[in-house]
Image 1 (spheres, rainbow, N blue to C red):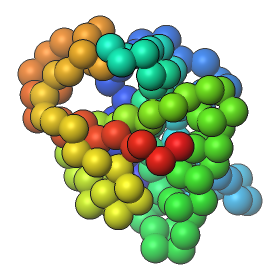
Image 2: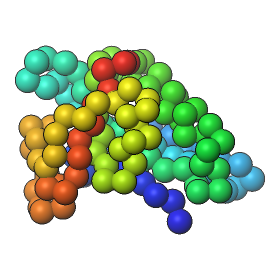
Image 3: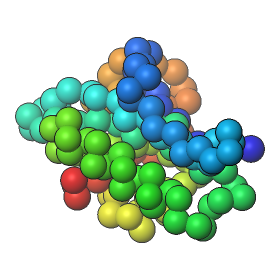
Image 4: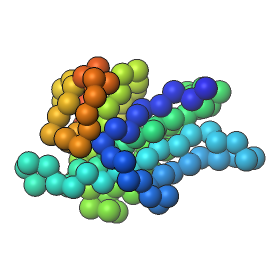
Amino acid sequence: MLACVLCMSTSCLCPQDFTVIERENKVLGCALLVPLGRDDEGVEVAEVGAFCVDPQFQGSGRGDSLLDFVEQEARRRGVQRLVLLTTRTADWFEQRDFKYIGEGASTLARSCSGSYLMSCIWFASMRI
């Protein structure tokens, strides 16, 4: 079973927002890049969601390659900051320069509701 970073910020997704790593008709990993618009500081923000790598391929560099590709795509789209929320994989993203920015609901998740968000941890990357 794939462990995923959830995407809770939007209900409207487009096929071009998904990236899939596939080999021999098997999904090895995937990620979602969701534009969120400008934040209160005027910075263009996007969320990384549904970030998954099959456990058989974790530790093989595929997650790093997938994140690099998503960051390149974000740059191409004019995104200046990536955010994600996670409850399980925070350490992996911290090792890749994502910084903790808070728990629970935030202004970036203003379109979301429900108690699930209260247990989530938001991270942001300033490196793109």
